[in-house]
Length: 455
Image 1 (cartoon, rainbow, N blue to C red):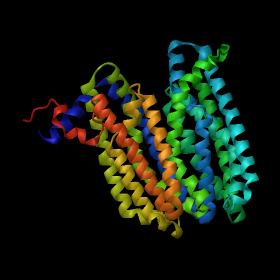
Image 2 (tube, rainbow, N blue to C red):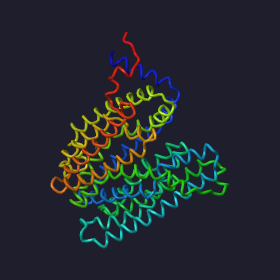
Image 3 (cartoon, rainbow, N blue to C red):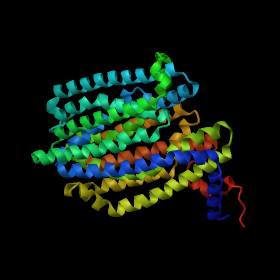
């Protein structure tokens, strides 16, 4: 059986599937926004690296990484569960519960992030002498932005639940980056220099603007009945549902951000900046997988719950193989042109090329193994996924503690690639043996999954 025939048959089947076509139409606009956001993100980071010294850029990356790590847990899982709650209450026309969950999740996120930011700032000042130059001051300023960042994530989840996907992405992925670049250029033009503390004040300002826009879009997207009803609260139930989302998202972001945090803590701000540039570049590899996950996740749930195992396998195989081909092309380009891309950040950043190549290998393996995370969470195995992510996060921290002191950015890259590959292999094995679904890109080559005759 020829591979071409199999691929054509799968494409034909999915093209005729109304759900698949509907998902594609909804996702296409968001895909373009994500492309624009990725391009703006990379361009903004290059600009900031050019305007800042390597040490100041490292302080900025370190503090922003801390903000990203803290903001998600500060939403107490509602960033993910709001998508479910808002969609459910809207379809049930429970406007009182919809208003209640929106109001309470925002209040809870603000309160938790305010306390967390204040506590961390106090701890840093108490141990100021142990911090690399500039980090304590940067963290103090950055923590002012933590409540606003948490509220941005809450608004994004709510807009996604209302199926306003583009409105959910534009403020954070596009507008924030455009504003940050404009603020950085304005400061540099006015005073002839830019430091990390001034830039972080700009970060807080841009997050406030994006929050205002997202809040306006959320308000205008809500049914008029929501504004006129009194809120009803089911706080205990909402927390219980949100907790697994908190574990999964928290462990995932720790896996993605701990490397920079530990580099800044165990190494230098400059090392964190160099490694941050390498991770920013290799983030392009995950773009195809992330975009595809958004499209296939609802179909995974539907096909599994309706017992359409063969269709589920075909969908996963098609998605995994497409993502892997996309990833191979991007990865090859990054290996070939990695030095040149790092040079865009500045001459000092080219020492991160070895780390970049190692990260490329790990993320390529991730793409090969398919959307295993969503395969678990969309089929009722979120607790298993949360445990695997938690073990992976612990493995990350241990490997970073062992490898960063002697090997610096290369050690951080090795630790990241090892942990990413490890938890993906485990989940892929469980999906294949426990569920009977091969999530890897190689599934498209197995003839037993396709009832297609060669002609």
